[in-house]
Image (cartoon, rainbow, N blue to C red; front, side, top):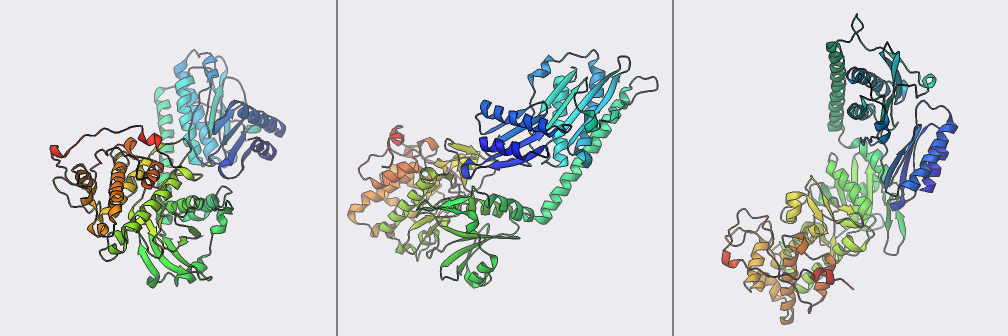
Length: 618
C-alpha cells in the first residue's frame, strides 16, 4: 500500500491517475482525482498525499476510498478502472446545513441547475467530465445557488451522466430543502451551496437563468415542460446508445475483448504458473503462434478431429519436437468460449497435479482462441464405462485407481492448491485417461475460484450437466466444494454400475441410478448395484472394498450438502478399510420424471454428525 501511495502521488501530474503495484495475489490498484477547478499542482499533490496516508491508517479492507474537498483517492485488490458503479454516500455534514425558507421553489431551481451542469460535464468534451454553474433563485435577496459536478475520467459519457443522475436524485431527497449539500460516489460527485465554493475563473462557470413568466413568477407548467423535455431527450439518448452498443456487440461478437481485454488479463504479472518444483512460469510463456498449431494439426484437418463439444472442436496434433498434443479450438463467436478460454489459462496454468490435465499453451490471435493440452491417448472416461466393447478392459483394480485419482485431483483443487477451485462441471466426459488409464480432470471453463474463507457462492446462470449437478445448485444456484462432491459420487456409481444416471430407466422404486443404488443398499443387496463384468474381475477379498465404495458414493450424493463428506474425508475413507461409515441418507431424485416410493422401502438412519470433522488425511 505504501508503494501504491507513492506511485499515486509521484505520477499525478494531470490531476487524475490510475496506477497499480505488486504482483499476483498482492497486486493492488489505485486511483486519484483532483477537483477540476484546481490548477495548482502543489495543492493537488498535497491533498492526494494526505488522503493516501489517511486511507491506509483508517481503512484495513480490500477496497476503500476517501474523499476530501479538493481530491479523492481509492485503492482495491480488484481491478476497477473504467467500471462505472454508483455507490452514493451521504456525508453527515449535510444535516448541519440550514433549511431554506421556500423549499418548493428552491428545489425547482436546484434541479434545473444540476441537470444543466451535469449535461455540460458529461457531453461537452471541452469540460473533461467536470462543470460548474450558478443560478439566481431570489431577486429580492440577490441569492444564487452554485453547483459543481464531476466524474472520474476513465468512464464513458453515458456512464458519467447516469452516475450524476443517480446522485442528483439522492441530493434532492436529502438536501433540496437545505442551503447546501453533497453526494459522493466512486465515479462521480455533486455539490451545491449558496456561496462560490469553487474557482470560477478556472472552471468558467456559466450564469444560468431559470425560465420565469413576464411577471417574474414561475409558472409550474413551464418548469414541468422543461424538466420533462430534458428527461425525454436524455432518455432517448441513453436508449439510442444502448441500442447501438447491442448492435455493435451482435455484429462484432467478442472480437473487441479478445485482443484488448484478454491480453491485458493474461499478460498481467499475477498470471503465473507454479510447477511441481515450485518454479514460476509467466502466462506469456504459454502463448504459441497460430502458424505452429496449424502445422501441428494439418490446418485443422478433419482426419485429426478427436471430438466436438459445446465450446468448439478438439484436434490431435504433433509439435515440431515430436510431442503429441490435444488442440481445443474454441468457437469464434462464442462468448462462453471466451470466458472458458480465460478460465482455462488463468486457473489451469497455476494448477499442477498428476490428476489434472496439463495445459501446454494457448493461442490468441484475432478471432482464434485455442487451448493446447497434453494428449490423453485413451480419451475420456465415458468412452470406457459406457462402451460395451471397452468396458471389459476396466477391471476392478483399474476402476479403483481411477476413483482414487479423481478423488485426489479434487482434493488438490479444493484444499491443497494455492487457489480454492470449484469445478462445477464434473462428469465422465471431463475425466480423461492417459496411456496407463490414470484419471486426469479437465475442462475448467466453468470453474470458479473461492477466497480462503469462502464456503459457498450463488449464481443466476446455472451451468453444468443435468444428472451430475447437486440439487442445491440446479434449483437455487448455490455451489460449493460439496457440489463437486455430489458430482464425484454420481461418477463413482456410474463407474461401479456401468450405467448412466441420466439414461437410467424410470421405475416405480428407482427414478434414477442414485435412487436405485440407495434402495438396493437399504435392502442389503449392495452388490446388485455393481456391474457383473466388474465383479468377475474382483478377488473374493475385494468384494468388501467394492461395497465400501458404493457406501462412500451414497454418502457423497446425499441431498443435504452438510451431510456429504469433504474430498479430504473421501480420500481417507477410500484408503481405510477399517474406519466405520455412517448410514447414507436418501439422495436427491432430481433426474427422474416421476417419483413413486414404496413407504416400506424408506428406512431412517441416524448419522454421526461429528464424523466428517474428525476424518482428515494424514
